[in-house]
Image (cartoon, rainbow, N blue to C red; front, side):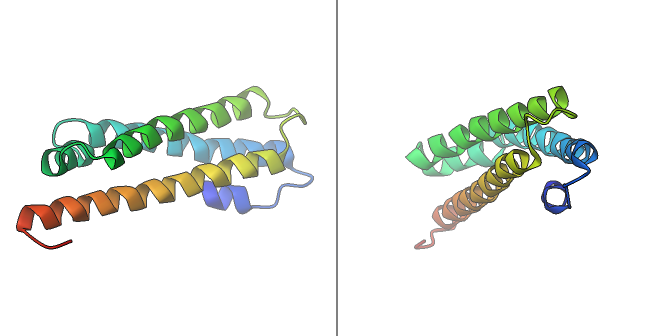
Length: 128
């Protein structure tokens, strides 16, 4: 939803474009909050990977990514909400921040998928 909003035409309709991007970003922030909480709690992806793998640096990296993505998403959302009609925050700047966030989400998804597979392989005695 965020990527679709970011890719939609903005010139001449910046205020409505920013509102649409902001609405999509609210969904991302909410989903990210739920994901981070569930991944790090007992039984979550990171907690289970820690049990299976110990404390490899990649777990610190995943937790750090959670913090950074949440911080970036909240900052962008705040900027959009505070300046929805202000020309100081251009649609190009919003797009740059949004694409960076989207890219970070994909990198994080890949990292967690790797952690799951590594833990699974170790658990069943695979050779990775």
